[in-house]
Image (cartoon, rainbow, N blue to C red):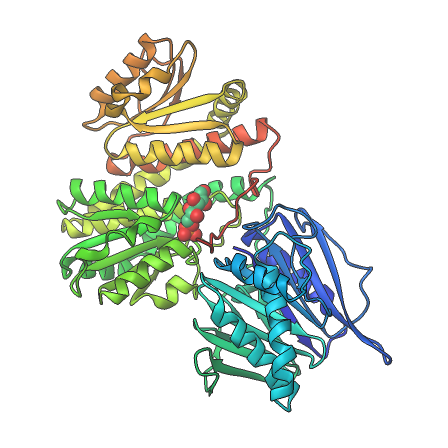
Amino acid sequence: MCGIFGYIGHRKSAAEIVLEGLKVLEYRGYDSWGIALLESKTDETKIIVKKKVGKIGDAKISDLPAGHFAFGHTRWATHGGVTEINAHPHLDCTSQFALIHNGIIENYDEIKKELEKKGHRFISETDTEVAVHLIEDNYKQLVTVYQDRQTAFRESVRKAFKRFAGLSAIIVMDSKTNTFVAVKNGSPLVIGKGEGENLLASDAHALFPYTRQVYFMEDDELVMIDKEAISVYRLDTGRSKTVQFAVLNWKSSNVQKGRFPHFMLKEIFDQPQVLQEIIHHAGGQVETLHKLIKHSYGTYLVGCGTAAYACLAGTYLFSKIAKRHIKFSVGSEFGYLVDFLTDKSLVIALSQSGETIDVIEAVKKAKEKKSKIGSLVNVEGSTLYRISDTPLLLGAGVEKAVVSTKAFTAKLAYLILVAYSLAENPAEGKKALLTSYKAVNKVLEETNLKIIRKLAKELIKKDHIYIIGRGLSFPVTLETALKIKEASYLHAEGFAAGELKHGAIALVEKNTPCIVFLPNDETYGASLAGAMEMKARGGKIIGISYKPHEIFDEFLSFDDCGAASIIPAAVIGQLLGYYLAIARGIDPDKPRNLAKSVTVK
Ligand code: F6R
C-alpha cells in the first residue's frame, strides 16, 4: 500500500524524476515519503537519503545533488508510527545498501533479534529495516563466495527474501555495483525499459513519461536492473529466465480537477457522463458477463469497501430482476468460504484499482479451485485485470480521490444492465439507466446542492448519524455511512431498517440524525415504519426519497428510476459525505489513515 519509483540511467536529475514519479503514486500512501540518491564524486560514492512526514504535494528537492541513480517511496504505515525515521528508504549499518518495501514481513521480530545479537544496529520501529540488515549480513558471507559483486548482491537479496513470511515487494539499491534488485510476492511492481535508462514503479502509469515498454513482474521473481540491462531470475532456484516486455498504448492519466476544488467533487460530477458511456457502449461487455453467469454453476461476487457494497447491491438486483441467487463475500472473508467452489463456479471480482490485495488473494484462491474468474475493474492492466480469465473495464475514467464515487456508480450500472440482460429484457435495463442519468443530473443541480450543504452544516454538530433502508436501499445505507465516515470522520452507521428494533434503536436519542432511504418500491412502507419508530424516540428524520412525507424533518429528493433509483440515492449520500468533509475543514481527496489502493493485508 505504498508507492515505489526507481530510476537508473543517463539523465542527471534522478532525484527529481523519482519525486515526480512518487507524486503520481501518492494515491497509494501519503503519510510520509523518502528518496535515496547515489551521489558519485570522483573520490567517493555515497547514498544520500531525504525523508519527510506528510503528503508530497508540491515538494521540491533542490537540496539534493545531481545523480543518475535514485529511488523513492510513499508510505502508508504498517509497523511503526508516522515519523521521518520510519519512512523509507532504510540503510544497512555500512550504508552500502538502501531498501524500500511494500507489504509486511510477518516474521521480522525473530529475524531482528537474531541480527541484533550479531551486532546490527536498528534505528526505526519498522519491519522493513530487518530486510536491509539481513541483506548486509548475507552479503558479508556471499561476497567471499562469488567473485563477482553483482552476483553476491543478487544472491544476498534472494536469500533474505526467501526467509520472509507474508506478502511483500522490496527494492534494494547497491552503491557498490550501481544496481537495483527488486523481488516480490503479492505487491505489484512494473519494470520499464528505456533508451540508456531503466525504471521501476508500483504502477505502469507512473512510467509513461519515460517509456511504454514494460514488464509486470510475476510473484516469486527477482529482477536485477542497471543502466544498460534488465535480467529476470526465479526466486526459488536463482536461475535466469527469459521474459517478454509489452508495449502499452493505454491513455495517459494526467487528469486535472478543472473547475472543481477537489477531485472528489469532480468525480461525483463525472457520474452522468460515466452513465452515458455505459448506456451507449457497454453492450458487448454486458453480453459477455451475461453468458458467463448463464453457463456457470454458482456465481460469487467479491469486492472490498465500496466495491463490496456494489456486490451486495448485485445480489439484490440479480434476485429481483433476473430471479437468480448470486452470492457475495467481502474479499478478506472469501478465503474462508471457498470450500464449495468447483471448476464450474464463476467468481466476479469488482474493484476500482484492481490492486486490492484482499480481492487478489480471493481470486487466487478461486483459481486454485479452477473456478472461472471474471472481473469488473477500472484500471486497465492492473493485477486483477491481468489475472482474470475475463477482465472487463468499468470505463469510469481515472478516479483520483481516495473516496470512491464514480467507480461505484459504474459498478451498479453494469450490474443493473447484466441483471436485465439475464432477465431477457436488456431494453428495460437501458431505460432504467437513462432515467437514473437524468435523476443524477437533477441531484447535481445547485438548488439541491444548497440543501445538502445546509444540512451538512447542521450535521457536523452531531456525534452519530444513523442510516436505514431495506432491500436495494440497504447497500446504499452502508455506502452512505462509509462516505460520511471516511470523508468527514463523523461516526455514521448503516442498518437494514428491519434490524433496527433488534438492538440499534437503543442508540437513538433526542435529535439523533436518522437518515432513511425511501424509494418507490416494495420497501417503502416498512422502512417508513422504521423511521417512525426512530421519530417516536426523538430522532431527527432526514428522508431521502422520491416524494416528501410529513414525518421528515429534512427532505432530499431524487426522481424515481425503478431499480436504478439506487444510483441517484447513492449520489446524494456521496454529496453529503463531501459537504460534511468541507464543513469540517477536511481534505476529502486524501482523508487521514487511508490510501487509494489497499495492497497490504
Ligand atoms: C471507499 C473506498 C474503499 C475502496 C476499497 C476497494 O470510498 O475507496 O472502500 O472501495 O478499498 O478498492 P478497489 O475498488 O480499488 O478494490
